[in-house]
Image (cartoon, rainbow, N blue to C red; front, top):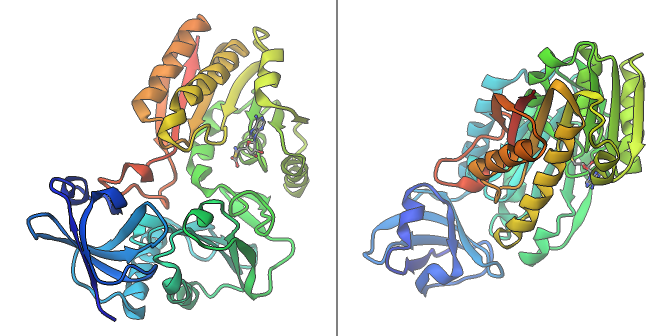
Length: 397
Ligand code: SAH
């Protein structure tokens, strides 16, 4: 197979030299060679400086995603090396025998658009759940899965390619078991808490591993607390609160399925802590509680309010509103744990809107801890998109 040669327009190399792995359509000056999805392309600056080697997507505005900054052969052995590198980091961070972790995190592991979560049950069986959203890498996914399976030896591998972004890449939507037998139920242990994971029908891969360490960071504040877990999903934060001795927990979500799994997880852990599950829009729920100051700890973990730069203003209004209302519902001296997983809401802008919400709510805020996504979702320097989760623990007096 020949390698396509792509020359960028003048000045377009700066971002790439800093570490960003994407080449957009409108940055390209000249293409020599084939541009089918999955073709290999070498990228050069306008001055003919080699910048890196990547794969082409014929349908996306992101025309090439770089895999390497050298002229490595992108073959089966190379993809195995990338997977092994990714797994070596996770092996340093977590216990492969008992822990669940994100085994591959896309661009940050040089495997653009590809993520894979590894869920480990109580008998040490592993289930891999992957999503792949870049047409260029699609022909190589079997090599990546082969390498993952060789080391992790999963009892089942699940494809969750039911992602809308795949359509933009000209890829079909698919999900299902592609290998093995799925343990039913699949129960993982996170920070000593048992949780059911629905890898086939749950949101995303079934469980949000990116909040694992943030859930743990709230343990100092939960004892004897009246806790609100807003946007609770399967109850990650709520369960940690119960484990740490909360007085009571209210868990709010707009999905009945999510609330059912909170209750199931509560029973699974044998928690006796009073639990109130509420199916509501969090905006309405917080409005009803405005000014009541009943909660000692409120967790706000909404879905991304924007996935593009163009809708950032309305997203900011949404974030500000829930933070304002949550602050008015918090007891004096209480703790607000507030998150944003919108990449386009940059860290400074998030802090600014929280500060303004504090002013409107007439509360003085103390930022106690600032965190990000878990360590198995590392941030690639020069590629800001890989830092998406912002998490603050704030005391409001
Ligand atoms: N905190 C969770 C993850 C939250 S994901 C954890 O630790 O696992 C976001 C959740 O918000 C989803 O479960 C979704 O069903 C819910 N959701 C989205 N919009 C909502 C809204 N307006 N009101 C209530 N819940 C909402």
